[in-house]
Each structure stands twice: as C-alpha cells, then as structure tokens.
Image (tube, rainbow, N blue to C red; front, side, top):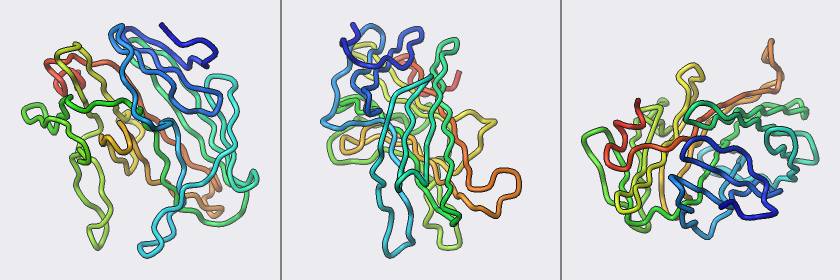
Length: 231
C-alpha cells in the first residue's frame, strides 16, 4: 500500500511511484511488492558543469508539488525545472523542461534516480549478459564521445534490473523520438539512474535558454530482464 501523506505521482499496471513534497522518491511498489530503498532521497537533481578541472556542482533546489509533477527553482529563480508525469499503458512517462533567465550559457547535468536497494539483483548489460549487483560498483553500458573520448553515453536507450526471488523487475528508458546525450546506470551509491547532458544558451533561436528531456519507467519480467524491457 502507498504510505499516507505522500504525493503519489502516478501508477500503472505493476508499478507505483510515490514522491514527497520535495520531489524525493518515498516509495517504489513493483508487482505488489514495496521495494527496499537506499538511504538516499532519489528523485530529480540538477548539476552545473564547470569544465574538466572543476567538474559538476549540484544546485540546491526549492521545490513545490503541483499539477502533474514537481517544479524546482535554482539560483534565486533564474533557473527552473518543471516536470510533467503521465500514465500510459504499461509505463510512466516523465517530461522535463528547463528554463534559464540569467542570459548566460549553461552546461547542465539533469538526473532522476530511483533509490531502490537492488543489492543481490541482476543488472543486464545486454539481452544475453547479466551481472550480479554488489556494493560499490557502478553498473552501466557506455560508449564515449568527444575529442578526448571523455563523455560517457549509454549504448542503448533502455536498461533493466531484476530479482527472480521476488519476481521484481524495473526498466528505465528514453523514448527514441527524444534523442539526448544520456546515461543509464545502477549503483548502491546513487540508485537506479538516468542522466542527461543538456546545454542552454540565449543564442538559440527557437527556444532561447531552454532544454527538454523525457524518460519512462516501467516493470519488466524478472526472468527475461532486458529482453522484456525491449518489448
């Protein structure tokens, strides 16, 4: 059952996600099982990238619930992230819209994490290869972009983790009609995560200072794993 006094974002056949008023993930129910959570808030995060030497700095948000998803503001309101969630047949879709009013170019890393404790579960590298999840390891399937080959990007637009004993399986994916530089991964440090590299510029003609992204979350078969996620 969904915990009381939590904001239920959406539910679909076999999956329910609950978010608190601050946008943190408070419960994940898959196949009727309330999944154990890591000691992490999960949910949405925005970081600003300052180059190879300084790296990325996580921005502190102000959040509020409303409409079909949370809204966050950063840097005194100069940057906003609006999230819309929608229930579809067999999956949940989330669409994000970033808007900057500072008038400067920005390189942002936007992520969403399900803080599921999947220690002992299976991560699927591809439909035929799988690895047992242990602590302290990041599970991903990356290629690399850039002149220095230093920008990781997922080789596939979908991913899966599964657990046969509890008949639980989760998939994170990105719609093919929303191509982005993205990363799908799992670790017990950061949870089950989708991450986007996004650039905002006031020089963009049609949508100055704006960027969008989308991803979907859905249950998958615990035995077939990534094959089920690809269906």
